[in-house]
Length: 79
Image (cartoon, rainbow, N blue to C red; front, top):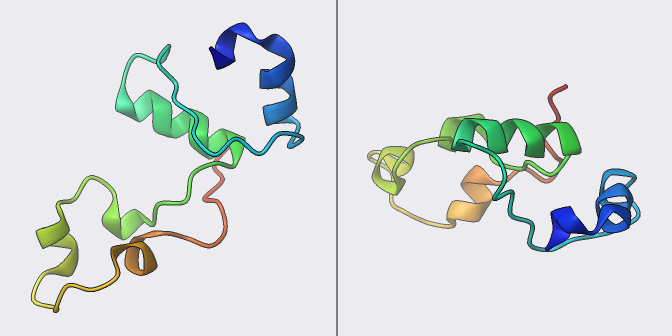
């Protein structure tokens, strides 16, 4: 588990590790998880897509590439 490998966690926070999948099972809520990802520079979801259904995101538009509409190329960092 990632959180039990202190050196891996330190490398992740230092930007020395490029984890492709990372799950924070020790946090107590989705809100808390998002805060951690934002602080780590690992949060890429655009605000207009947060906590919305696909139907709400597209509205009257013809559905298309959801990643292009909702994913940021740069991390959404919040300290």
